[in-house]
Image (cartoon, rainbow, N blue to C red; front, side, top):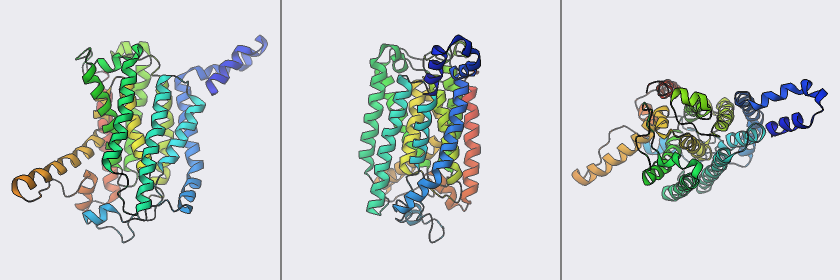
Length: 381
């Protein structure tokens, strides 16, 4: 909105007034609008945060059901645990991002696709959070039902990109890190599957990571910083050519969304740091993870997300390994054997006696290392 308004004022202004309005030309620069989006989203989050927390408490949208990690895993937490803390805090992030994007972003197919998907996944997560509260069991919507919705959305996005000639190569050409040329071209089926599983996998990986105060949102902020850089480069023809990465016209506007996501995430972390005043719930984790996956697909870098989001990948892998080991050992030996004391992985370290804040901080450090490695793919080719 601000971009279009500024350009309109410049176009209709009297020539004598153009010089006095020259500062409006700043809105043409993605870097300026990204910075503005980050600050705006942060201020909106800090402003709306107390009101949303109070509203969720008043509506009794809190985690009153038993803490699953404590009940099933036997974690030594205080008797109250995390019960009573408002959930659905992802509403704060989604509201801040969407309002900020309305102000600062230019509208194109990429921004619309990303923001609509953010709302869709947030809606799915909200329904899941509401079901947990209504049932007071912590189970919510059946996992298969959530996966069906996620796969339908991700499949639609992948097919949409393939169906439009201008974006078809985002699906049919397969790009891998540390290599300057596509490793495969015309790989339609492979590309569709890769894009779909990138979005679904990222959404669920962030959801699994959301188990300790500040863990998921802090790691999301670090990965968002990586994609802020990658989206800007992908949308800049000269920088993309110099660094030999795919140039994607229009992808630069995703940088503004990354800025909004970063600011909103910082504002949410203000309330979510230990001891948390609010949880993002599936409303936030499914949406944030899905958006990271979508942006990775839109800039032709799905495999870089695997590197940047290494912490998310390991958290999800720990669950897959544990479940697989359970099923295999039950079938072969008749007893359940485990690899980890408890999954996702952050609970394994809780069982080892690590304080929650130490686990979160060390996972942040690992996430920063993954982010640096992901950015290194820009030069090591």
